[in-house]
Length: 245
Image (cartoon, rainbow, N blue to C red; front, side):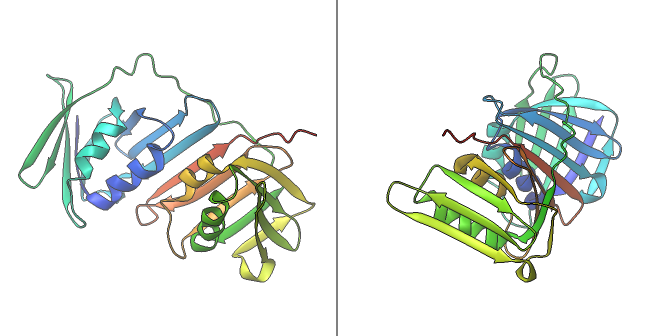
């Protein structure tokens, strides 16, 4: 059994953080909420998402797995308006998810979850940590997209730096410790990442919302933030691009 009602913004938030990386995902449903963990087809990035049942207007569920095509669900949700309540119901007989928005009903076929992997979250020891406002980070990433396909992130004990170098142009964003929400680094940490992946990971977070970035040297980065009015949490892992000499 799965029967829930949720504001469209919450469901769109789940789609926004998942669909840029993966199209087909396995929703793990329990009476406490919804979770998913998936790796993109190129094995460059992982998304781990948890949304508490308290994020829903109504929520009744038993333990189950639902294989969801995020492109289909995203297409349905584009028909909803801000403030709409969306009804979700699993129909066991037809193996479909019934999505209702106002008077509109979509019966969506589900994907067989038998072949879907259950990726493990690696335990990374990343010595650098920064918590930054989304608006600051988004500004630096948007500027970087115009000059390069990769960016370097650096954390040291005094500041956080984002840098992108193209053939002719460069972009640099340096934020001292007093302009950051939090900064912890015992030594300098620097890694290089794909701008496309990094931009997709953070673009759904707006304004003054905090984003946590964990960094090492030529290590994956761990990026975390809350969604659904702090009733949901997202963790991304992104593999580094190794610089050639």
